[in-house]
Image (cartoon, rainbow, N blue to C red; front, side, top):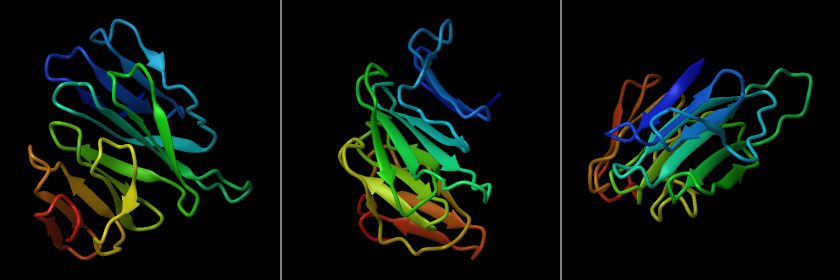
Length: 173
């Protein structure tokens, strides 16, 4: 069953992830579904999905569940910049996964929370490159969707009870 989902405003484009270690996208309002290519489920769970207002940019991220018995692969982020036709993958070998994906309306500014690294990763170029942000490294961070322009972003931490704000596209918090 789906645990995260993002949908274009008219329902044409949909991306979702489920507990069965897979992520899917639809370009026809859910009439048919395609599994994301190279989505190595393993012990992973899809935990974040987001989409631009046009549906052109899609973002899905994975959280690896460490069962203690096997070495785990790194967490990853899948990004599409062409309505799901092709997907690229970003790895973080120091992290077991990402959760809580968000992007602004154009898709240019994107955020994910690195669950075990306790930090925010951001992209300011439509998900082409990713970098750890200057946001404070706190556990249990939840991301709020960036503003329409992407200039203003907010993240909260249930561990600290604080709200972190960026007014410069996520450069400083």
